Image 1 (cartoon, protein in one colour):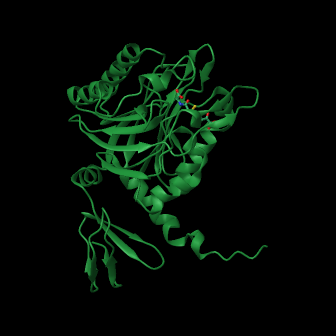
Image 2 (cartoon, rainbow, N blue to C red):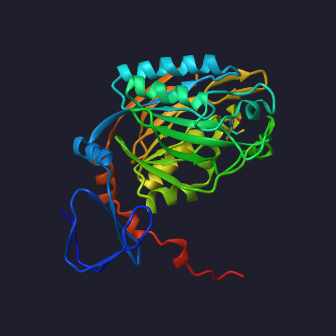
Length: 335
Ligand SMILES: O=C(O)CNC(=O)[C@H](CS)NC(=O)CCC(=O)C(=O)O
């Protein structure tokens, strides 16, 4: 049992209850302790994470697919990927960004956007319930605040079909791809503002989407402020940028956060104007690739076992959480 020899200040927010506790304090396995330079937090862990920690190893699957501009066709593909994941013994299947729809023309995805309680999401909730598997739906066209906009929303559904968590993509892909197209995701997408982590049978998940991968701050927040153990990066990377940057960025995020990273991808030609970079990856907290579905195998799943004790041992031997100097402690001297 870990023992804390300092006074413990538990600040009130959605995870912590306000309390000042006298040392020595003994924590049960139902608490996660996080320390910053000035504070020490305790968070009660939900039963899912406790179960995952007890059994140590849980199987996950990362899908790869070529979504098109047909909701029914994509749902059929997702259903068969779910079957594959279930027979492989996976407790969670991650589907890529734009799993349910990739428009052939600008503006198409706004037209099919629906609220999270609409019929499209309902079908995916039923799929999770009927197959008794958790789903990470890596980028759903959620209806925005007007008819011209949507949210690119990552939805986590549990094995009884309930939506456990939603994250709206923060960093939007407004990029002139060298030798490729100009993308302007912000022309039809409202950016999110909230960082989201959620407990699951494979540990505490940190939710992100695609282009977020290029902004390490969000992953630092997920690991050091939200106790994430597994970072999800569902994507629809372009062929050009994926070939240059995909694996390097993902492995860097795994190494610098000491988290597992699961990245499900779109692959192949989604339509005449669009080719995605498929290479679904599962990476362990030491940065080793433990599951991969290469680009040439356009549709399928990569499978790996998440071992929460590996996270603990990597973090114990290289204790960066204690050693890091967060930006507020730096002194800026250049003018
Ligand atoms: O719009 C859709 O249908 C699905 N969403 C996407 O394809 C998004 C926004 S256009 N793509 C990316 O973020 C690519 C990032 C990327 O390729 C990089 O960072 O290099």
